[in-house]
Length: 202
Image (cartoon, rainbow, N blue to C red; front, top):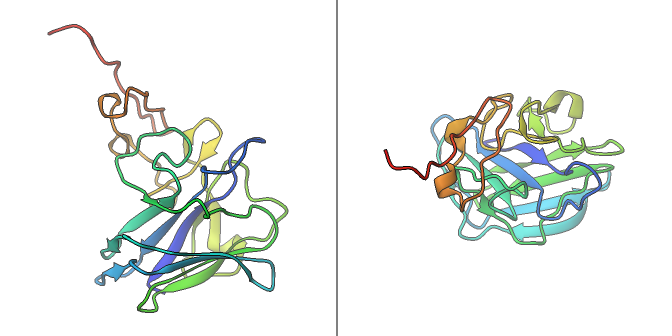
């Protein structure tokens, strides 16, 4: 398929609510084709019978160039308080991800690009850890299609939104403190650090 769900974060760490903290990543995996997401449908299907839990029609959605990725969430900080330099596509509050049992996600554009992929069939989705797509051609076997992220975004939260599998976010993927509403940008395991804002004149 040309349009692939490449990362899923369905279960925030600890016993806190997952509401507003879940996100997915969608990638145009073609080498030379643009894909319009306007009017596409995003659907969550639960259980082996793939019963529809909800359906979202994307509006004001981006067009992805060849190889481009979009992160989708209900909040621009992905619910973890980080200020990213990329802009997530904001989904309505009806977006939620099941984190136990058999779970599928489906994306389908008006032109027919997309897929239905299983992202969970275990007792629980990894706690605080995204699943990254390791095999874009496999839609059903979790052991083959997915791998758990080892890139730490912040305490007990692992993922690579907007990046390839295993490619941790770096300094360029975050806004500096001066552009982040005064909130500090949290260090990643890639060694991202920011100097304190100086109040002294040079």
